[in-house]
Length: 169
Image 1 (cartoon, rainbow, N blue to C red):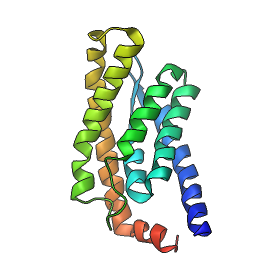
Image 2 (cartoon, rainbow, N blue to C red; image 1 turned 60 degrees about the vertical axis):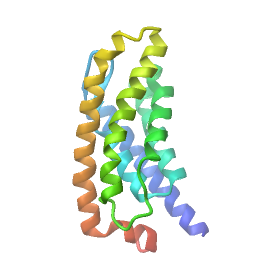
Image 3 (cartoon, rainbow, N blue to C red; image 1 turned 180 degrees about the horizontal axis):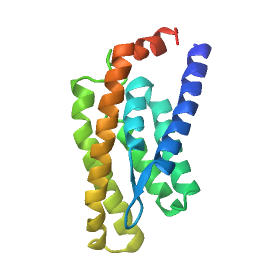
């Protein structure tokens, strides 16, 4: 049991770093932030690890990316949105790519676009101008979905999930 927790903790640390790097440095700037595919890694880890670890990855990676790239104002919103996103996916299925996780991509897109819209509206006390950011949020989610599917198929073919859960990593 202790080794399993340590293994999940180590995998979580690696994924926090990956989410941070992909989000912070592999992005396209927009009018009020940037579009990135770091969410695809969050979707992926939500399918590989139990929720507490996946939440730490989503919240931690997004928090670091926002705070260390000059967008700290977005960090509280990102922590909440990315933490909630994890609950849309399941790690309890044999494969990463399955019906539930594939269908979860739709509410994940709505949560991202709606969550950042609401967060920006609250920050600026304006519910009209944040509408301009919705297409970028949708684009980010769609690009992240592609990354999730491609990596998920590869992970399923390599049977990584069974190695993580079976202790033969």
